[in-house]
Image (cartoon, rainbow, N blue to C red; front, side, top):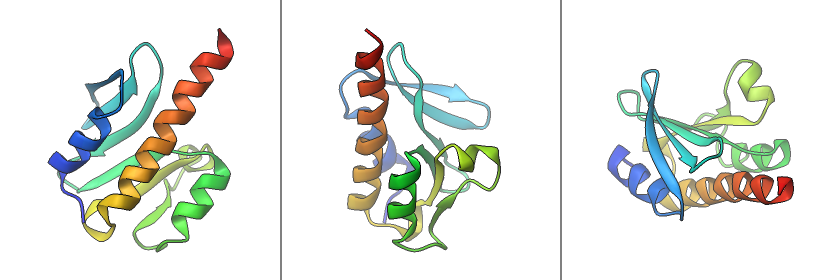
Length: 110
């Protein structure tokens, strides 16, 4: 299971990642690019942006612990992870998948 400090440590371990306040959350983004994850420390949840295909794969772990954000953001791949219910390896893998997608989208535009 993952706590807020572990989540931050994993998210910031990726090259060129920075953290910023984002409403009641902390956002993690590739420098100069878009956000790939947000953390809500009080609720012990994180939202991670994934492709629709990746979203369905991660949600299959446990639909009560990993699920699409219940609004238009969920339809765009934003996925909620209840951090106390999922293993660190799953969160780490999802964060890397989101980070890599944002990084690759930056490279495609150049």
